[in-house]
Every structure is written in C-alpha cells, then in structure tokens.
Amino acid sequence: MAYPTATLDVIGLWVGWFLMLMIYSYPLYKENVAYRAAEHMFIGVTLAITIITNFSNVMRMCITPLTQGNILMIVPLVLGLLMFTMLIPEYRWLSRYPVALLVGAGFGLGIRGTIKPNLQDAIIDTITAPTGGAMIDWFNYLYVAVGLICSIMYFMLTFEHSGPLKAPTRIGRLFIMVGLGAYFGNTVLFRFTMLTGRAQYFLQVLKLIPM
Image (cartoon, rainbow, N blue to C red; front, side):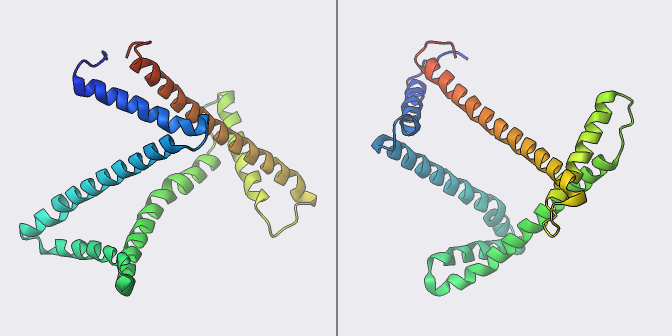
C-alpha cells in the first residue's frame, strides 16, 4: 500500500494520527482536555453511525416490506416504537413488553448456541479417549480430564475441602490458576498487539516506514 496522494486521503490520515495521539495522551500523561475531546468525538461519531445504520435497517427490513403488502411487519415496527416510551416517564411501563420479548428471544437463541458447543461437545471430548496412539494425544486427554474433574470438585462448596477432597481440590485450584494465567497472558498479548499496530501507524504517517 502506497502513501496516499489525494488531498482528502492525506487529511484523513493526519486527522487519525492526531486523534490517536489525543487518545494516548491519557495513559501516557493523565486525563486532559485533548483526551476528553477525542473521547466525546468518538462517542458522537459512533452514535451517529449507529443511528443511521439502524434507521437504514428499519427502512429496509420493516418499512419497505410493509409498503409492499407484508402486514405482519407492523408487529416489529410497533414493538420498536414502544422501546422509545422509556423516554416518557408516564408511559415507561409500555417498554417492558418489547424488552421482555427481546431478552427472552436473546436468551433462547443464546442457550441454543451454547449448550452443544460449550457443554455437550466439551463433555463428549472429555470422556472420549483418543483414537491415535501418539503419546501427546493421551497426555492431552488425561490433562483435560483430570483438570476438568478436579476443577469441578473445587467448586463443591457444600463439602469441606479436607480428607479425600483435599488433594483433588488443590489440584483443581492449580488448574484454575493456570487457566486464568493463560487468559490474562492472552489479554496482555492482545493489548501489546494493538499497541504495536498503533506504533506502526504512527511511523507510517510520518513516512519513517513504508505503508
């Protein structure tokens, strides 16, 4: 990708560069006017894009089919309009119906997409022995099985972790700490990757490295 030559593209490149510096002025220095201005600008632009996108979706998915004779589209249109009664204290109770329907549908779809991959498949993979004879396959199988069983036993809070439960619950705690440590390390690595990308953009705008 070559450095842009069009005036608007160059202006957009430098505007993004200055906004990036304004955002990073908070962690590098402290909260200041430049950071707040960039933050408010980001929130305002995001809100504007969201409103325009939602309006376009309503026109495309609801209003247009309604004008073409699909009378059933009036149901989501009315439910969507009832959401705005949150802004009117006297009629705020009407917003409970679309919110309840939205939460119920979202919960149902979430359960449908969660049980099989996160529960059923995980249980099957845990209790199914590897078909190959490689040592690493059996090690992974035993590692996951022992870690899962011991981690579950650690959360058996109705029993005191002593006697026969002392050893497996301690092992489960170690597995949980390893998992949380790996998750934290992955988060830190992701943050550093983002920082590396911003540093690369910083140098590219100044033409110190090629784009």
